[in-house]
Length: 82
Image: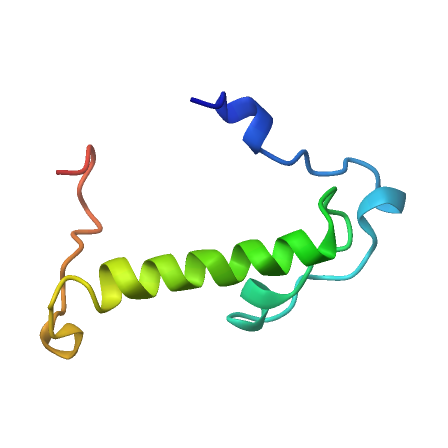
């Protein structure tokens, strides 16, 4: 039970702190370390690999769903989810 506030990184407000470069193009930005992040590079990549494995084992492979046959699962006009 960790308060969510302590889990979030604060985005730098000044341009000197965050730099002037745009993020990498998708999907490369998923694995690119943002220089403004107050987190060590090693922990960032270790955390990324951990969550890749969790998602792959739990959701992609672990559910036994043929994902190539799944389409149109989200209704973008929904207001409150459900």
